[in-house]
Length: 477
Image (cartoon, rainbow, N blue to C red; front, side, top):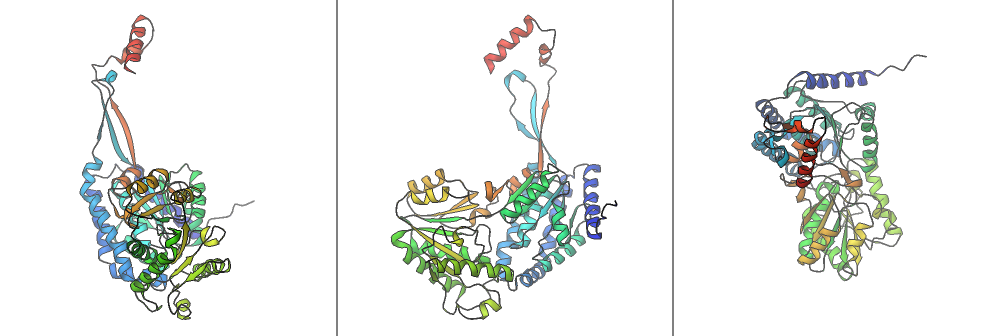
């Protein structure tokens, strides 16, 4: 019986991968000058097409604030590229490693080498940043890059493919199509490293497919990132900062505060303060240009179901004036929503929200927030607000999360000298800055033996000479 033949799209995918793969094996590691040139070309590709990227991303969303695209995506990339370019020479240099006394005067070094071909499966929520930020680290480390954009961002994907093809040779970096069959096959290619950003559910499937080739993966997933409001917190300050972080990109941010844990006596006051800040920042009308749309009708319907379920189970729903305006749904803009009195049996407390809905959960005892966080999957991010350093340090030491921002939200991801990544169901591995360079490099240990070292004393025939050496080694161990 004849085997089914591959489609034209899958044949093209295989051919493109092998162009990258063969070049990575045939050519020597790219020197510093070529890596810097690739980073310069990448920056120019973004800088010369900023307005086009903003328009394409907005078209995919229905409406995306141009300011949010600029601040959260474009400027973020410029910082990453500048940082990598400035430090790349140092990152590439062999690293000195101490040598144990018994092997002196030998030397140890770590040599950073390109892995080969890095695959990037990109999400739709921050398509420019979350596609090209890992590419910065991969190119800096000397790799070839293959990118699969999200099927939910067709305008962006087409533009990115056009621009990358203009700036890069097919054996340096290329962008695939977004057809469903490509999406299901991409992770099965024999990459030297694979980066996926998206949901935990799909992340498991990607890891399973990559595992067949023993491909190492960096999974940037999500989950329910808590914001803990300590009794010592300034409610006005916390409410303002959480309101902004929750509504940036209409809540479609993997590290957005998913829910707030608030002292029971302050729940109502906190909720009202958050709502007031939401109104001040983003208004009460769906026509507000600063407020982004939900990516698809399916996602909008899912958010409606979360709110309806919470209301039916007894939660108090707070929304801005005019939330009944049909233009919210017509423009696919979901009204900023607070779910006051959220409980564990509500779906909104069981799934990652990924939208402009903030459940507010009250607590009585100081240790309850820690216990609540630890009773659930380890989150991608955790936020703590307060002035009590002992309470802060208790949360930091007794909870485990991908990253933390104290007295604000989101900003740990912007620190180029810190890694970004999750843990457990919220992800595995990390990148950004030197952490990205190391993730996409093989740090190869090299031992340089000295002719003065008497390692030959270990060779047989064994006898009194080796017994004396064993005794010496035990003393040194």
